[in-house]
Image 1 (cartoon, rainbow, N blue to C red):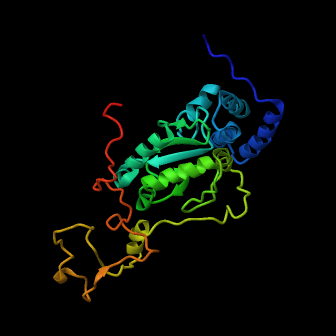
Image 2 (spheres, rainbow, N blue to C red; image 1 turned 90 degrees about the vertical axis):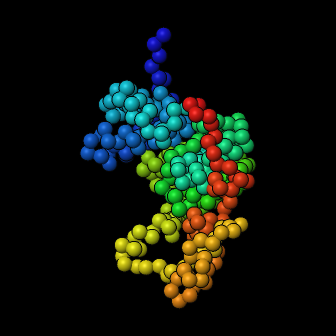
Image 3 (cartoon, rainbow, N blue to C red; image 1 turned 180 degrees about the horizontal axis):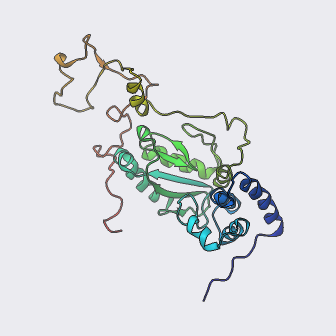
Length: 286
Protein backbone atom coordinates (compact mmCIF):
# COMPACT_ATOMS: atom_id res chain seq x y z
CA UNK A 1 0.00 0.00 0.00
CA UNK A 2 1.35 3.47 -0.83
CA UNK A 3 2.16 5.62 2.19
CA UNK A 4 -0.50 8.19 3.00
CA UNK A 5 0.50 11.88 2.97
CA UNK A 6 1.99 13.10 6.22
CA UNK A 7 -0.50 14.88 8.48
CA UNK A 8 0.03 18.61 9.00
CA UNK A 9 1.11 20.20 12.26
CA UNK A 10 -1.69 21.46 14.52
CA UNK A 11 -2.61 25.04 13.62
CA UNK A 12 -0.88 26.65 16.60
CA UNK A 13 2.34 24.67 16.09
CA UNK A 14 2.31 25.40 12.35
CA UNK A 15 1.88 29.13 12.95
CA UNK A 16 4.74 29.24 15.46
CA UNK A 17 7.12 27.22 13.27
CA UNK A 18 6.21 29.25 10.20
CA UNK A 19 7.19 32.49 11.96
CA UNK A 20 10.58 31.00 12.76
CA UNK A 21 10.93 29.49 9.29
CA UNK A 22 10.23 32.82 7.59
CA UNK A 23 13.01 34.35 9.66
CA UNK A 24 15.38 31.62 8.52
CA UNK A 25 14.38 31.92 4.86
CA UNK A 26 14.96 35.68 4.93
CA UNK A 27 18.66 35.09 5.61
CA UNK A 28 19.29 33.59 2.18
CA UNK A 29 19.06 34.97 -1.37
CA UNK A 30 17.77 31.57 -2.52
CA UNK A 31 15.11 30.06 -0.29
CA UNK A 32 16.34 26.53 -1.04
CA UNK A 33 19.50 27.34 0.93
CA UNK A 34 17.37 27.51 4.08
CA UNK A 35 16.62 23.79 4.02
CA UNK A 36 19.39 22.65 6.38
CA UNK A 37 18.56 25.07 9.23
CA UNK A 38 14.84 24.46 8.69
CA UNK A 39 15.39 20.73 9.21
CA UNK A 40 17.06 21.59 12.51
CA UNK A 41 14.03 23.76 13.31
CA UNK A 42 11.51 20.97 12.80
CA UNK A 43 13.82 18.60 14.66
CA UNK A 44 13.68 20.94 17.65
CA UNK A 45 9.92 20.46 17.75
CA UNK A 46 9.73 16.68 18.18
CA UNK A 47 13.35 15.61 18.67
CA UNK A 48 13.64 14.10 15.21
CA UNK A 49 12.69 14.92 11.62
CA UNK A 50 9.21 13.55 11.07
CA UNK A 51 7.35 13.16 7.78
CA UNK A 52 5.22 16.08 8.93
CA UNK A 53 8.37 18.15 9.41
CA UNK A 54 9.61 17.30 5.93
CA UNK A 55 6.22 18.19 4.43
CA UNK A 56 6.36 21.53 6.26
CA UNK A 57 9.83 22.29 4.86
CA UNK A 58 8.80 21.29 1.35
CA UNK A 59 5.70 23.48 1.34
CA UNK A 60 7.48 26.60 2.58
CA UNK A 61 10.47 26.21 0.27
CA UNK A 62 8.60 25.14 -2.85
CA UNK A 63 10.33 21.75 -2.94
CA UNK A 64 9.03 18.22 -3.30
CA UNK A 65 8.99 15.99 -0.26
CA UNK A 66 11.37 13.70 -2.17
CA UNK A 67 13.92 16.52 -2.39
CA UNK A 68 13.61 17.25 1.32
CA UNK A 69 13.81 13.56 2.21
CA UNK A 70 16.99 13.17 0.14
CA UNK A 71 18.70 15.82 2.27
CA UNK A 72 17.26 14.71 5.62
CA UNK A 73 18.45 11.14 5.06
CA UNK A 74 21.93 12.17 3.91
CA UNK A 75 23.12 13.96 7.05
CA UNK A 76 23.53 11.99 10.27
CA UNK A 77 22.69 15.02 12.44
CA UNK A 78 19.05 14.67 11.39
CA UNK A 79 17.32 11.89 13.33
CA UNK A 80 14.68 9.83 11.57
CA UNK A 81 13.12 8.27 14.63
CA UNK A 82 12.40 9.32 18.23
CA UNK A 83 15.57 9.77 20.26
CA UNK A 84 16.63 10.72 23.76
CA UNK A 85 17.09 14.05 25.46
CA UNK A 86 20.84 13.44 25.30
CA UNK A 87 22.66 12.07 22.28
CA UNK A 88 25.75 10.36 23.70
CA UNK A 89 28.27 9.75 20.95
CA UNK A 90 31.45 7.77 21.55
CA UNK A 91 34.24 8.40 19.06
CA UNK A 92 35.46 5.10 17.64
CA UNK A 93 37.80 6.49 15.02
CA UNK A 94 41.39 5.34 15.05
CA UNK A 95 43.05 7.33 17.83
CA UNK A 96 40.08 7.41 20.19
CA UNK A 97 39.54 3.70 19.57
CA UNK A 98 43.07 2.64 20.50
CA UNK A 99 43.06 5.00 23.49
CA UNK A 100 39.94 3.31 24.83
CA UNK A 101 36.99 4.48 22.75
CA UNK A 102 36.07 0.95 21.70
CA UNK A 103 36.12 -0.18 25.32
CA UNK A 104 33.97 2.79 26.38
CA UNK A 105 31.43 2.19 23.63
CA UNK A 106 31.17 -1.52 24.41
CA UNK A 107 30.84 -0.84 28.14
CA UNK A 108 28.09 1.77 27.63
CA UNK A 109 26.11 -0.60 25.43
CA UNK A 110 26.11 -3.15 28.23
CA UNK A 111 25.59 -0.56 30.98
CA UNK A 112 22.61 1.09 29.26
CA UNK A 113 21.23 -2.06 27.65
CA UNK A 114 21.00 -0.47 24.19
CA UNK A 115 22.65 -0.86 20.80
CA UNK A 116 23.89 1.72 18.35
CA UNK A 117 21.29 4.42 17.74
CA UNK A 118 18.98 3.03 20.40
CA UNK A 119 17.42 4.92 23.31
CA UNK A 120 17.07 3.95 26.95
CA UNK A 121 13.57 3.08 28.19
CA UNK A 122 13.32 6.35 30.13
CA UNK A 123 13.88 8.36 26.94
CA UNK A 124 16.94 10.10 28.37
CA UNK A 125 19.94 8.75 26.45
CA UNK A 126 20.50 7.69 22.86
CA UNK A 127 23.84 5.96 22.35
CA UNK A 128 25.79 5.98 19.11
CA UNK A 129 29.31 5.51 17.88
CA UNK A 130 30.55 8.41 15.80
CA UNK A 131 33.53 9.16 13.61
CA UNK A 132 36.23 11.69 14.49
CA UNK A 133 35.25 14.61 16.70
CA UNK A 134 38.38 16.53 15.62
CA UNK A 135 39.61 16.46 19.21
CA UNK A 136 42.24 13.74 18.95
CA UNK A 137 44.56 15.33 21.51
CA UNK A 138 41.84 14.76 24.12
CA UNK A 139 41.24 11.11 23.17
CA UNK A 140 39.17 9.21 24.01
CA UNK A 141 36.34 11.70 23.53
CA UNK A 142 32.63 11.39 24.23
CA UNK A 143 30.14 14.00 22.98
CA UNK A 144 26.76 14.80 24.48
CA UNK A 145 24.52 16.85 22.17
CA UNK A 146 27.74 17.89 20.37
CA UNK A 147 29.48 19.18 23.52
CA UNK A 148 32.87 17.72 24.43
CA UNK A 149 33.66 15.40 27.32
CA UNK A 150 37.40 14.79 27.02
CA UNK A 151 39.86 12.16 28.26
CA UNK A 152 37.14 9.71 29.18
CA UNK A 153 37.51 6.30 30.76
CA UNK A 154 35.05 3.45 31.03
CA UNK A 155 34.14 4.47 34.56
CA UNK A 156 33.86 8.20 33.89
CA UNK A 157 31.64 7.53 30.85
CA UNK A 158 29.35 5.29 32.91
CA UNK A 159 29.15 7.97 35.58
CA UNK A 160 28.34 10.57 32.91
CA UNK A 161 25.35 8.69 31.47
CA UNK A 162 24.07 7.84 34.96
CA UNK A 163 24.09 11.53 35.90
CA UNK A 164 22.31 12.46 32.67
CA UNK A 165 19.57 9.93 33.42
CA UNK A 166 19.25 11.16 37.00
CA UNK A 167 18.82 14.76 35.88
CA UNK A 168 22.00 15.95 37.56
CA UNK A 169 23.74 19.08 36.33
CA UNK A 170 26.51 17.95 34.00
CA UNK A 171 29.18 20.30 32.65
CA UNK A 172 31.13 19.65 29.44
CA UNK A 173 34.91 19.77 29.53
CA UNK A 174 34.75 22.92 27.41
CA UNK A 175 32.22 24.85 25.42
CA UNK A 176 28.67 25.93 26.18
CA UNK A 177 26.64 24.52 29.06
CA UNK A 178 24.77 21.34 28.23
CA UNK A 179 21.17 21.54 27.04
CA UNK A 180 18.69 19.01 25.66
CA UNK A 181 18.83 17.72 22.11
CA UNK A 182 15.72 19.71 21.13
CA UNK A 183 17.29 22.90 22.49
CA UNK A 184 20.52 22.10 20.66
CA UNK A 185 18.59 21.64 17.41
CA UNK A 186 17.01 25.09 17.75
CA UNK A 187 20.45 26.66 18.29
CA UNK A 188 21.73 24.86 15.18
CA UNK A 189 18.77 26.31 13.28
CA UNK A 190 20.39 29.70 13.89
CA UNK A 191 18.48 31.03 16.88
CA UNK A 192 20.44 32.51 19.80
CA UNK A 193 21.17 30.57 22.94
CA UNK A 194 19.56 32.84 25.50
CA UNK A 195 20.81 31.04 28.61
CA UNK A 196 22.93 33.21 30.87
CA UNK A 197 26.63 32.75 30.19
CA UNK A 198 26.12 30.31 27.31
CA UNK A 199 27.44 32.59 24.58
CA UNK A 200 30.56 33.59 26.49
CA UNK A 201 31.47 29.98 27.25
CA UNK A 202 34.27 28.75 25.06
CA UNK A 203 36.97 26.16 24.74
CA UNK A 204 40.20 26.16 22.83
CA UNK A 205 42.28 23.58 21.10
CA UNK A 206 44.56 21.43 23.20
CA UNK A 207 48.30 21.75 23.56
CA UNK A 208 49.07 19.03 21.02
CA UNK A 209 46.69 20.51 18.42
CA UNK A 210 48.55 23.82 18.43
CA UNK A 211 52.07 22.39 18.11
CA UNK A 212 52.17 22.78 14.32
CA UNK A 213 50.96 26.37 14.56
CA UNK A 214 53.64 27.23 17.11
CA UNK A 215 56.33 25.68 14.93
CA UNK A 216 55.02 27.60 11.90
CA UNK A 217 55.41 30.80 13.90
CA UNK A 218 59.00 29.90 14.68
CA UNK A 219 58.38 29.05 18.29
CA UNK A 220 60.29 26.15 19.75
CA UNK A 221 59.40 24.19 22.82
CA UNK A 222 61.86 23.66 25.63
CA UNK A 223 63.43 20.21 25.24
CA UNK A 224 62.33 17.62 27.73
CA UNK A 225 62.73 13.95 28.43
CA UNK A 226 59.77 12.02 29.82
CA UNK A 227 59.82 9.04 32.09
CA UNK A 228 59.28 5.68 30.37
CA UNK A 229 55.93 3.99 30.90
CA UNK A 230 55.49 2.35 34.25
CA UNK A 231 56.86 -1.15 34.27
CA UNK A 232 59.30 -0.62 31.41
CA UNK A 233 62.42 -2.67 32.05
CA UNK A 234 64.46 -1.81 28.98
CA UNK A 235 66.54 1.29 28.40
CA UNK A 236 65.34 3.40 25.50
CA UNK A 237 66.94 6.36 23.75
CA UNK A 238 66.45 9.41 25.90
CA UNK A 239 66.66 7.41 29.15
CA UNK A 240 70.43 7.24 29.06
CA UNK A 241 72.24 10.22 30.63
CA UNK A 242 74.16 10.69 27.38
CA UNK A 243 70.86 11.14 25.49
CA UNK A 244 69.42 13.79 27.75
CA UNK A 245 68.46 17.20 26.42
CA UNK A 246 70.96 20.06 26.37
CA UNK A 247 71.71 21.37 29.79
CA UNK A 248 71.52 17.87 31.24
CA UNK A 249 67.76 18.22 31.66
CA UNK A 250 66.12 15.82 34.08
CA UNK A 251 63.11 13.73 33.11
CA UNK A 252 60.01 15.87 33.00
CA UNK A 253 57.17 15.46 35.47
CA UNK A 254 54.13 17.17 33.90
CA UNK A 255 52.25 19.64 36.07
CA UNK A 256 48.55 18.98 36.84
CA UNK A 257 47.50 21.74 34.46
CA UNK A 258 49.61 20.56 31.53
CA UNK A 259 47.82 18.63 28.82
CA UNK A 260 49.64 15.37 28.29
CA UNK A 261 50.45 13.66 25.07
CA UNK A 262 49.42 10.09 24.33
CA UNK A 263 52.87 9.00 25.47
CA UNK A 264 52.29 10.39 28.95
CA UNK A 265 48.52 9.86 29.08
CA UNK A 266 47.48 9.12 32.68
CA UNK A 267 44.27 7.37 31.63
CA UNK A 268 44.82 3.61 31.53
CA UNK A 269 42.67 3.04 28.47
CA UNK A 270 45.07 2.13 25.67
CA UNK A 271 44.99 -1.21 23.94
CA UNK A 272 48.26 -2.08 25.61
CA UNK A 273 46.59 -2.08 29.03
CA UNK A 274 45.15 -5.55 29.74
CA UNK A 275 42.72 -4.05 32.25
CA UNK A 276 41.12 -1.93 29.54
CA UNK A 277 40.94 -3.97 26.33
CA UNK A 278 39.92 -2.00 23.28
CA UNK A 279 39.59 -4.62 20.58
CA UNK A 280 36.71 -4.94 18.12
CA UNK A 281 33.28 -4.81 19.73
CA UNK A 282 31.66 -6.98 17.05
CA UNK A 283 32.59 -9.86 14.85
CA UNK A 284 33.59 -9.08 11.29
CA UNK A 285 30.53 -8.70 9.08
CA UNK A 286 28.14 -7.72 11.88
